[in-house]
Image 1 (cartoon, rainbow, N blue to C red):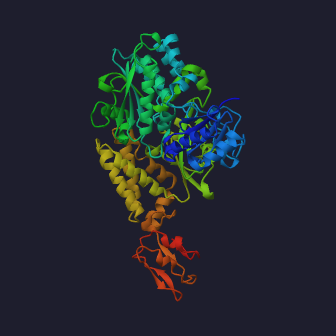
Image 2 (cartoon, rainbow, N blue to C red; image 1 turned 90 degrees about the vertical axis):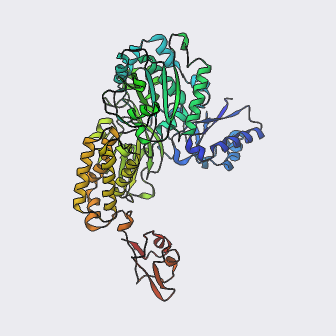
Length: 597
């Protein structure tokens, strides 16, 4: 009988959901029934469907249990492992496929159109056991590169694959490596940018938590390709689980001689260290990141020179983000043609998205490039919950833009999204529904940008703050049509004059919402109304005196004492001067006689 493996998600989301207690409970229950020789319990990384975590997958049955609680463990162990009867009411789906290629045959299409390359092994192996990574062909690509390929041949394969940087810019990875290889000198560096700062983005964190060795192996391949012997993983301190698993992975790799001196018996030597970032969004920009590694304040500088020519410590340096590195070993193992066969001609391979916001299935999604936004949002994400109408999707985080229903059939690709006024970014994908105010969304992202601006250049330091002030005026009902003109002019000026890519892309959310949802801006400045009912200054709550039941429930729930009337005798009335627009009265009314206008 094949041994049963219980794979418990131990990513950040599921850890918060007490997956650690689940592991203890499974081990205790299995031991109590004497099943420890037949069933083993393993912690794994993120399986993707975060909205119904903690997830527990059962191998070889390929069954996933969703939203598992400690009190469910006894039933699963008794019914499934002891009696051989899966617990139907806890199941997400089941599959006759390998867990790395999960397919839906039940009630969710979440995995059906996904293809895991960057997320390879996440949710499948124990990230703290290097032997499991090796058993899944881990470090085979490094061995192949060191013993069968020259540095130029490695670079040529990456160039031929068409892999483009997954951090947002989409620059050809192989070309970046070629620049560094061509630079003279024996002292060069490789850096992994794990400073994932976009709101709602957690792709890189999940890869490092679920498959840290894939990044370490890729960095070694990159170092061999350009002639480097040292590297840095720059990761924000807010990712404690990822940091600990990276430390553990580095230690294990050194113990086995897979990191350090004379790797695989060759002359190649490589070591790396972890550098913790303090959470500054600007340190996601490569020149600011280099400044931070060197112990300086993280602030960008003009390019050229580019890091491939003059990077950390003034030496040639290549910087790639986590997801980019997660593709490298797979490309070396399977070849450039294999990778190019996936995705589109201009954007080969897959892309990982953190799907969030007003969406039924939240979590990590990895799809081939060329998949449409509609497929991701409706077929994988399940559409907006509660039958709400889809309004827009924000891609690329604070540097991206909003796309509408009419643009959902756009194939996902670097160039395609840019043409529509948005961008791929690192992979955040926030879905908005009819209850979202697009002016407020733009204000939210601009508030984030102002808070995270390094302040080095005037357009970003002063211009974005002025844009935020204008957006706040509009949300408060103080704006005019001239305010919109000023906002648009200022956005274009910042885009043209800011020092770094983050500043240049900062106005994108404003420009895209002005373009796609100008009617909402007009409603705010002309009609002094917020169509979505979000901007409090433009709201009013009114009680229909003819229908009022005189029950007084609304008055009891009003924190501002803005509602007056007489129980059973006089209809209740809202004093608009005192009303703080909290909406408690509307929620308290059982008779739907209070309206929001």
